[in-house]
Length: 377
Image (tube, rainbow, N blue to C red; front, side, top):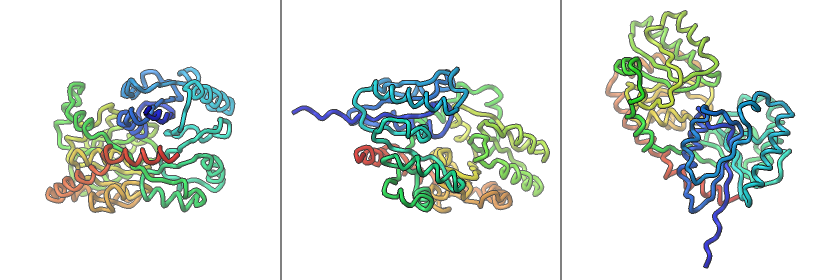
């Protein structure tokens, strides 16, 4: 008897350059059983070398890019019409397609222009900041999807309170992690410069995130000022880049923290920096999940994180697997940093507990949840 043809799933993303959602997508693409599903990938924006995660996409996955670098400067209504036309043409060229997974997401603003197909929306962020009219327009768009994937229980509770009529479409799939890859990359030091090696030879704490409004590095800097006034001397490396870099550097300069807090820029491989750190600090105004938190936990780091919407508190099991501090509360954060600096036993305890908790997010535990959702559409 002939085997049934595997279901054809098309994942869609805006790009494959630096970003947590993009790392998660490549983890899925490498982990999904090719005997169970035929997978294709549509990338909206061609960014040349910036799309460096493309090299991690397995060769059996067909990849199409819709726009080159000269065409993505304007996202006007005209661009959306062109995007919808190219997207439909790209999907039609793939033959029989069973499900489209809008992973970035990137199709929600053009969904009314598209041919009707089975579609899954992947949510990566907190939506509580939306105003009334923004929520109304968003509701009209996302109700067109067959399923909506959320990353944690807290996100689902929040989403149900904002969009209660969509609760039957909601499902939870936490982000998966390729821990073997993370562990292997944490020992790769051949590309480190002499300056990098000198910095890593120091005793330091670390944060890894983009320097954008959703993250909250100002509170980290304010905590540094408080600790300096209390006589603490330590080094805090911040790995990441973004639009707020100059503003944050000005604040560091203002408080005279240039020998304490260092903006190191983005690193394609942050894991050696995380592995050698004493502990990990994550400060954010809102989250979707908190990928870097889990990565640091698996590498054996005790964690301090903001109790923000949504993700970190659930990852840290409401404080059982790491220390939490209230939004924008530099005093409490400073106290937690001092606590980890002063109390090595506490740091060791959270290091052990957090490493055990991180294993809950291994890709082999998450993939069955993904398969269940793909098979239900």
